[in-house]
Image (cartoon, rainbow, N blue to C red; front, side):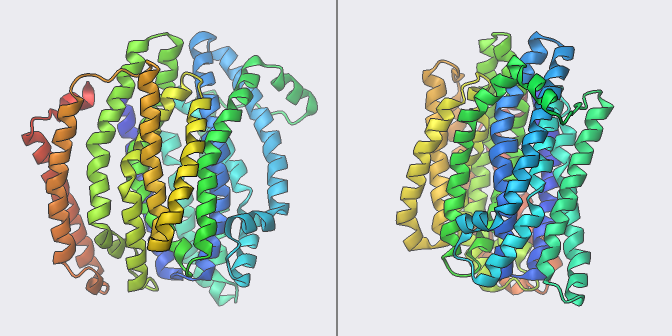
Length: 519
């Protein structure tokens, strides 16, 4: 399977996941509005998600996939299956202990993340955190299975499983919330149940896929099995790599935790506004950055194991060109067309005009740094495939300090939107730093034609910006709240028109898109 076909597969299922996630959040916004209880759910849901990104999809995946790909290339499938069994055994035992500690320590976790919640919201967040904490256990095993499937070039199922979570949460909000309300129970609590059902569905789908491919891990929960698993040199190597990987991933999550803490002390609704904006920001981030990163990681690790440095550099160059081609116009759209996007998607039911305005300015902050947020997903695999996890971690620490320094400037001026802008600017600094490191280290050698590509993209993006700014002001987006289908149709018209303008302008500027995609 070619890289572009693999990336397209991941992007398609990621798009499906994001659309279902968007439907989930639109339904929640309409059903629950913005209140202390929605802030409480946002905090409670963020805790297992933050840990998932730190451990499961973060430190563990970054350490596990390169070692797994190297083992498959050098030692063969039989030895690699032994590695999978050993890692799964140790991971499961650690997760059991972690879940017990997380449930017991929920009040501490909520206080660290959002001490500014009102008493009722704080108590609700603690309760929902306890219900949802086992989700991190499900997702850690899912991350292990996804790493195995991706290494065997089965990208579709890992990319599609998040849809199951969104479907479970949609059904919880649609069918469960009215029932909870009728029973006299706070309706938002049903969303915690939806999260856990979704996590179990994801776990089941991944395990079934592994079983179909004959790769299902054999997990043995005993002290002897743990000792045997730890005796594997590859297992020790993964744990060794997880140290700096955890440091690097923790930096971004610590930044998120600090920002959530700050947002909890800002006006009520700030956490919810930021959550809505981040959902829209994650559309292009996931479809471009995550998809490319997922596809490139095992391929780069295999190229490194084969000592094919030209192929290694070429794949990074290809990924970065796609990032520039697609992330720059996406950033322009988020900055210039934020209100129509937010109004069409969230301005329903209890979501008021003021909520649209506050979410829109947060989205603009994220959009300013979208290029960096996407590029990081392509640049970091260049380090991880070389089993160099320390350098991105140290860069991340420095960027954390920069980001929080920017908060001192931006938050007094822009409130919650300042938090989003700080993250965006920090991501640009992070991406540039990673790029310089790869070039100076000789790992990445840019191919000719970058200057021409940048000029072509900037020129086409300028035309796109003019069109979208006109569209943002020409239509009374907020006044169309009662005419949902009209507003959706107008949004689709402007988005498709903007895409057409951009790609026609790119073509007129002389860019051969087919050649770029398949180069």
